[in-house]
Length: 239
Ligand code: SF4
Ligand code: FES
Image (cartoon, protein in one colour):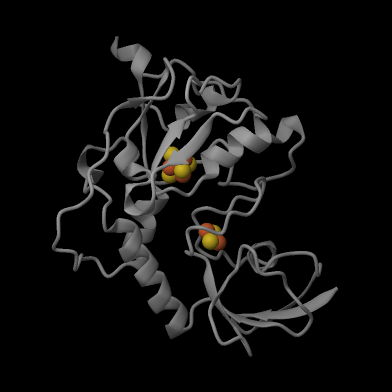
């Protein structure tokens, strides 16, 4: 076991755990977008930055393994400033769609914007606009502008559904989520996306991914809740 201290509280934890897992197991939630306990680590959102004693740079908690004697701060002034900067970066091109978004009120991006951003934007240039209605299948419509490129859905298709169907194209702030050429998002779990569909979706029952043996993902982090910052619509209901 490794003894670590997080925000002044000491715990004995499995040395194979990462900081985010060890903290969560002991009741300390570190903000995150791209990390999910049932998926591989991508480390691309940088929302989970924490301060580790004797480490000059901030570290991402989702991919930094604990070690004996490690001292971690999850809410120091450096961490809070970095978190605000990450939120500012994520929101630069994000549309101000909350008033018309079905996910409003149940959106982690919105929650984190309240909790961790400065509440206003310094960005005066034009936002990058992306396609608002991309049909990923006959059931799922993607609003590309609302995607924060966390890649959870991409990894879900690869690792849980075992059907690689989603990918990113373009570079930088023009990156877009899309299906592979000729592919539809039609894997057996894609109905799980009803979490993000409009209320018109008929696919109310959801498959428990825990029941499929991918491990306990914990309350509030059901693997079907992949996308935190955008919403899909039910194309079928509209046609
Ligand atoms: S669609 Fe949602 S889950 Fe997929 S990459 Fe974008 S924000 Fe993440
Ligand atoms: S949760 Fe760690 S980088 Fe995204």
